[in-house]
Length: 364
Image (tube, rainbow, N blue to C red; front, side, top):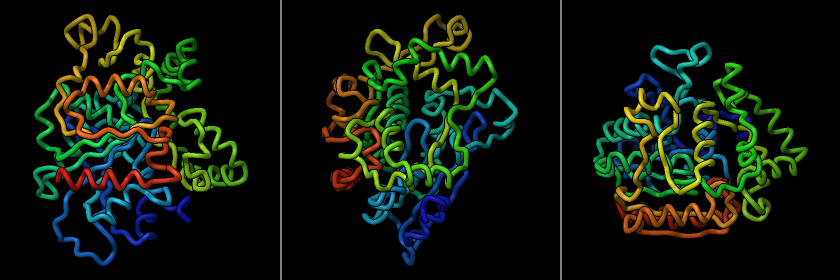
């Protein structure tokens, strides 16, 4: 049963080939990449167009292959060489060349800006070299989109590595986020308290697949309510709730408390903007200036496709409209769906992915 299988075992059980690769970043993190080069029996030496799938906040690569119509497998079925990233600090990417994530608090001193600065060039550079391709298609969800937006705004030339950037549940600003629990963080500084008590990892994967599966199987409404509370409105209409016991058995991916502090800062901005982490009095030491540098999204080159949801609590429509305005002519395709934030991977109706595949083919 997929709930109790590893990523590799899920792939093989469904007839797909699997590879695992290790990639080192310039600041010492060791990231795990998964690869689905095709179906069992295919010629692995065959040259295929490459797609790279990057998960969102507190997630992991498993999210792309757990639905009945799983995006990772849909891409493989469509003839692509599928690679999947795992962000630093997530379940599959906890290694470091000189730091121990269990012992060294310094390991957890990162936010999504470090993923943009270090993880993306390391991962995509490795994939292009390994596949001997000049470009790949980048498909990302949530924080995975923010990482690429940040990377392209500071290094527009990085777009030379991309055929197309497809953003699912795209995130730039989160000024209008509507998640009750996250909005409450404005009043209750939980992440400051966690840091004070030397807790540096947030929502790690507890390896309790059996427990999550049984709870969701018996108390299905409770798991539906969790997804609705955090990310999606009208969960039963838009998400594959029957599959939730299997999907949630692989969650969460985990991240750093510092990363969550960055998101908390973003929710507290009074104006529309995206900026690096605010270290307060240490900004001068870190950035050479009193305030964190801003990311200028108007400098981001295309082609970019945006898919966003009307029931999305995390990528609010007003925030997405601001993002689309900043990106301007770089957006070559935009579609609004009756989706929540998780629906892009776990949706009941995944036919929208036919359009994603068409876009990838068009820009290859």
